[in-house]
Image 1 (tube, rainbow, N blue to C red):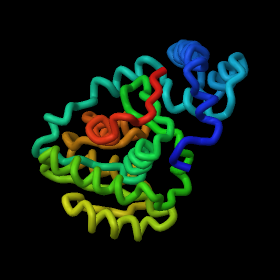
Image 2 (cartoon, rainbow, N blue to C red):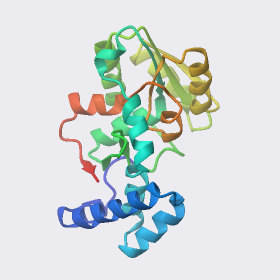
Image 3 (cartoon, rainbow, N blue to C red):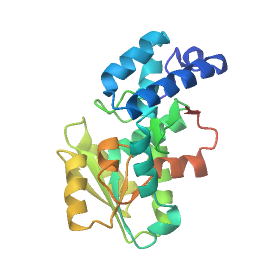
Image 4 (tube, one colour):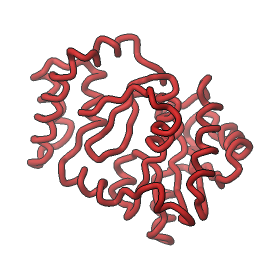
Length: 232
């Protein structure tokens, strides 16, 4: 599901915001003092009696302050990408953009990156929004005047080969590679070119890269201004 969950309007209604922000504050405090995420999230979730989707929101939106600050320091503006190599975590970016188009819940995370609650990252399927998302990706890459754009797609996910073919057709500026792990492929490329910029919201990749860019947020700000975004 990439649009709103049937219960999202109730779970993330305006009257729930104070509870979610209080829970986020407690989780942030615990993580900043070295508590492990699973235990800290369970403790906070139980204390505030949060539903599964609300806990997922905290999981994707809150991190230890030092980790958030490190990613923020590595983040670059669009103007810094002129002539640069951009390494795109394809499924990650497309799912977030499709979620924005479908008015699903997005979280503005502590590290500044936009993340979704789509629950599709392990079982991606082409949706009614995929073509529109690809067109937005095409336009975004053209506007950034990159030196190189390389899009990595996750081979274990269903129909990755067909998606790769469609990306090549719609987004000709991007070189497409279907790989066992975009995380590993991007890490290997960064060893060759540490100045390359990573476009993903995957925390594991973000924490290894010297320069990162929130491509999904760049697209959403420019083309999907009414996307449903929650800040904790």
